[in-house]
Length: 138
Image 1 (spheres, helix red, strand yellow):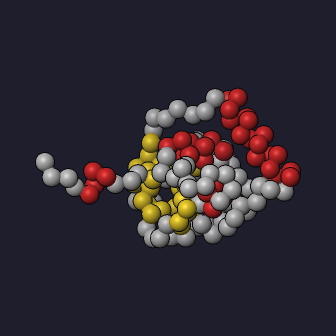
Image 2 (tube, rainbow, N blue to C red):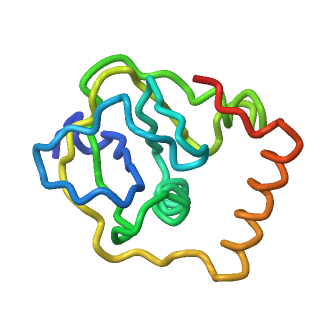
């Protein structure tokens, strides 16, 4: 059986509380999941489901936590907020783009982090903010 390029395609995910449908676009200019009131000039996404789960769980708002399979529509770069600060070499497969992400589908069955682990992450983010080192490189 001949190999096709689609057999090796990378899937990308975006965690949020926004209610979207296939074909919708996720665009720049929305508030960060991690910084109050800050509007971003990038859209963020990941090549791992775990990173998208964090995005959904930490997203601001009252909507349901959602994870979408997305397709970048333009150039992509490593997310310097993770690759430069925490995980050199980008093992988390975290990316960003100035171009929209097209929603391909939704991941409807996924396991979130424990309440204890989620609180640890929130506490860590609050500590970074209090120390002044939680700034997003936008």
